[in-house]
Amino acid sequence: MMAESINVAVRCPECNWRVMDKVSPTTGKIEIKCPHCHKIVEVDLALRRKALHRQAG
Image 1 (tube, rainbow, N blue to C red):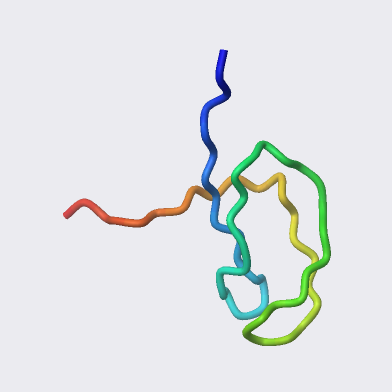
Image 2: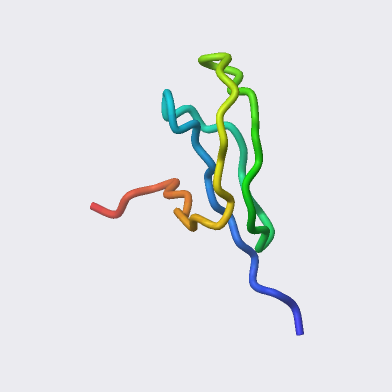
């Protein structure tokens, strides 16, 4: 049985810049340097905010 694909946009908590896409059911915390604001921030990968590419309207 194939696992369902997960596509979650991970954003910088400081400037809200999209720093990466989470495509697997990974959990935990990582530190990453934001390419936009250049701050090292801690990102919780357990949060599941789906990427919204289009809004119905």
